[in-house]
Image (cartoon, rainbow, N blue to C red; front, side, top):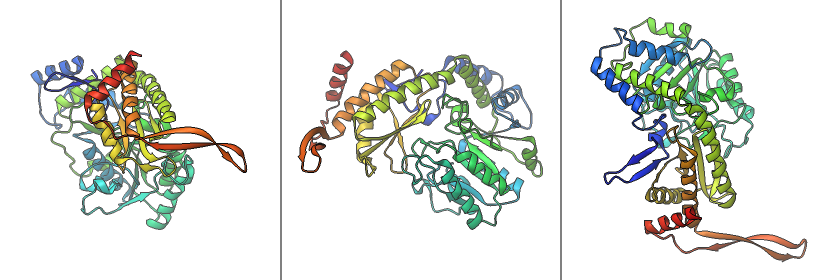
Length: 437
């Protein structure tokens, strides 16, 4: 289900999915049953002894990936997965330098914190060997939607920031923490080409964009027409159970046989059973198709709101991984930091939960469970309308004013509005009236 309940029993529509983690719904009976059954048989052993829970899921997972990506290493989180991927790339290439994109988020351990490129998420720890390239941001970037122009910075970074060789390149197809920022079209193919030329491995961070969330494809990188050397994943893989994975090729995986690599809880039978059950539900209930249909519908509704309310600067994303960026000035793209907090609180008061992200904290992150329906989207959209009407704090209208040079000219006049009402029931009543219409 796509709902959460508080201690009083009040129901909330979950528009955040535990940070893009709950893929097939909260407490899905088939996932719960599989976990309970596994707990009765084997709760934990060690990956030194294979069991069907880990072997069967690894086989099923590898079947969802293209090319020769067939070797699976299980971890407990996305941070662990990305740490392992970076280590594999460095061991395989013999080069320490790794490139990631500005505005990216890859984890909170020392290594992945180095690859993360937002000061909000970085402590002052040793973070050597990581270089950050220009962010191919279609909304705020200098080259707009021209991905190949952004990718030239990758080559420049290799030429002038390294010895000419790199260990790897890590990128999210859609930056999650970065504000549901889609990489500009053409960027990844061009960036991958530059990395390959420099002897590096390409790592796809699918922690948030993987597992059917984008709708059009099972993995986010597939939407860019590339095949990485290493794929990392977490969040949706376990439907809320702590689980992550790194998938690579047999040739690359050989580097871990030179020493003993071990993860005590990675591949735990309970976790891999949950992951396998969630994967079966995704396929059985056609949740990828649902993410595409419902996500497209919701994005269309949100885009229509953008045309009406100037506080919405951008609507972006794919499937059920959508972002709505709020600004106080569309021309200057001034982040609406305070306003977004008001919207979140008011949406919560009318029964809708949502997340926020982006470097400035002014982007709604809409990543609900993939069982989200059109009816849920219908509830979400008018809820947003009611809040936006009062949040904008300004009423704009168009009038004709005389102009000596051009005669009558359309001019937009901005008029201040009264302060926002603070009583939650005020918004609820407005919402009820709108729904009745």
